[in-house]
Length: 96
Image (cartoon, rainbow, N blue to C red):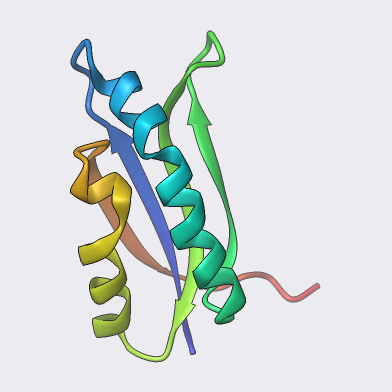
């Protein structure tokens, strides 16, 4: 299994937070399925200095990058235009 760090920034238009909140239950359901399959390691919202959600971080693992890409193709935050910029890096959780 290869681990990945997903760092995704939200759109910044006036409706961005509304789209996030509308998509949020569907995003959580998708992540719940990732967790059940063993692909989800951890994740959470990125907050600005005022405590408002402006993006997401996820640590996931897949056997092949193509599986990650297939997940992102159906991820509600992608489909509903919540995440504007997505950075993906290879990652390794420290085993301490």
